[in-house]
Length: 202
Image 1 (spheres, rainbow, N blue to C red):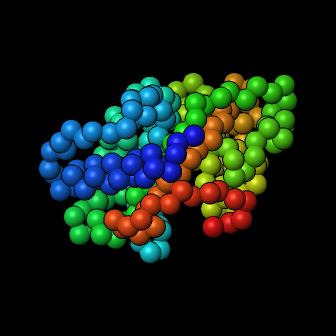
Image 2 (cartoon, rainbow, N blue to C red):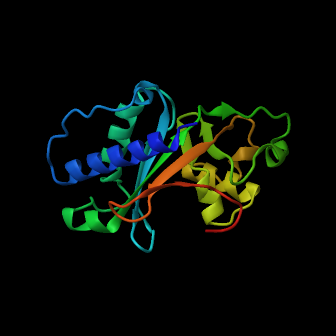
Image 3 (cartoon, rainbow, N blue to C red):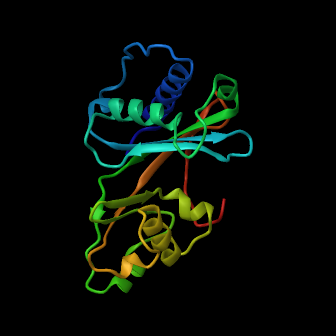
């Protein structure tokens, strides 16, 4: 778990990357806490303000690079999420930056695919569905925002991977879970808060 102070630092750094990339300025070296040298998975999400509509969300799910580098890569890519037009300078003052720090994904081993329903907790777990070259991820906050139950969460994760919604019944499909710690701006360039995920729909 990250301390609140460290969480604030992740958001401030992600915001700096977003601004520099959109303004097409070179990002100078930034001195960060030692925790940023640890390898962690991370996602950076951009949300419109005040409506909080998705504007971009890209991440590195596996702990394959230092957190500082992962945030830099995710934040930069989130400004050019292929689902949306690239973020422009006029939007920077109307966007909230959110950082989700991930635990290492854990394979859920079950004898019967229906056992996934008791192994996954909405509001705690994020999911990854993987089969062959197909792979998709949904963050822990997503099923809460859409008020999904576990079965719907599994189906949506499979579809995110480009698989049929019932692919989680296929024993060749691997399902991983992970948890996330979320820090986000309350308003553009404003104070940072740690966001708690609860079972209520946002």
